[in-house]
Image 1 (cartoon, rainbow over the protein chains, first blue to last red):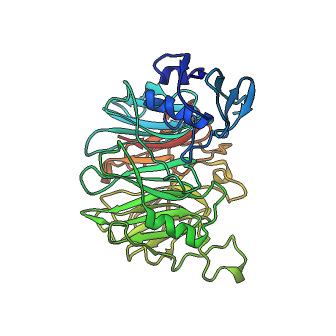
Image 2: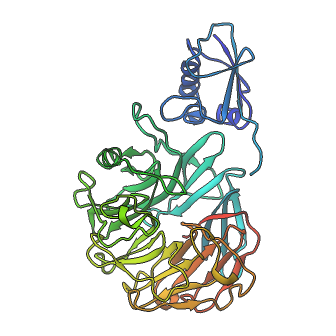
Image 3: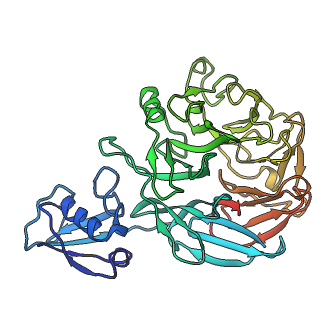
Amino acid sequence: MPVVILRAPLTDLAGGNHELRLEGANVGAVIRSLESSWPKTAGWILDDQGRVRQHVNVFLNGERVREDANVAPDDTLHVLASITGGS
Amino acid sequence: MRELLVGTKKGLFVLRGEQPDALPVATRAFEGDVVEFAMRDPRTGRYFASVTSGFYGPRVMWTDDPLGEWQAAKGPAFPEGAETSVDRIWVITPGEADGVLYAGVAPAALFTSTDGGASWSLNEPLWKERIAGDWQPGFGGLALHSICPWPGEPERLAVGVSAAGVWLTEDGGATWSTGYTGLVPRYMPEEARAGTNALCVHNMHRAPTAPERLFMQFHGSVYRSDDAGSSWNEIAEGLPSGFGFPLAIDPADPDSAFVIPLTADADRVTPDGKVRVFETRDAGASWTARGDGLPEGDAWLTVLRQALGRDGEGSELGLWFGATSGEVFGSADAGRTWTTVAPRLAPVTSVRAS
């Protein structure tokens, strides 16, 4: 199963887990597995329509991807907030 | 004890105290996130907050103890296939039926909870009106921000939308009609006004003891309806400006309304550098400036849509408002005298008294 690496505040919502192994054939399915296992994460990464939120970045083996990117069992996903400033 | 829930650009502040001029911060929640709106349901005592993370989106949070843990509600969220997502939750309003609450969101839609706020579902008939009518956003987005239940009649509801006017239902949201008559969109060319749905409602409240009466702060004027929101009469004469966002009423007096005018849509600050709340007690025939204790000069404040709240009624009406400067002001004597309740919070988005 692919590895998903989270940062705060998502780690807190996922029971304090920084790193999880989750099922899924693409990014959206992996995030849905996260939401199923840790319901407090629901709606934080994917929006109402199942799209990765505008200001959330998902990196697949170092490449920024969207929800429809295919994921292999030995892949690594990083989920983190965009770098922003000014408010 | 008095309690104020102050939503800000930097979290929720809960102010508690015995005296109106001494309401210290009891707690701060949702640090780093915008709290668009927060209220306490008087029927259950449950607290609700609309919280928007700049990264992780909007959500309704609820708790029975604001000094403790908050829970995330299930929704509001558009059903898959709606091709849109909730951007912001503008308002949460208790309904008349047991366990019912309403939420108004952007893009403009009404959500209903029948389980005390734990989960929410879209009112699809109004959403279909939005699609069919091609509603267009105001400067602050396409927002359903005002929800006015009818006391004792849970099937009747009026909602205000920026910028799609007033919508009315008498069958619990199964069908909707417009309340456009009398509203004048002076921000549009005169030849384009007739028949337009681009009606920028800024705020709307119903008088609970005479529910056919509503007051509205519009984009550029103030209105009163005496027929449950079907038609509107302009009542802005006597105000320094027709422009503004906040609106409150004294629930004991159906002829009462309170507004905080701003100079104009192009200059959204308190007129002449004076902070004043304007009160009518004759249904808008005349207005009285209330500013005893408020900043009288070089005070160029902006007071946002949900940033005026009230508690009590009659001579003990409490009025509480905050500005984007981070100040919160209050009056415990129906606006006759004012004090600074909190001088240096974050930019204030909403104020409600518990």
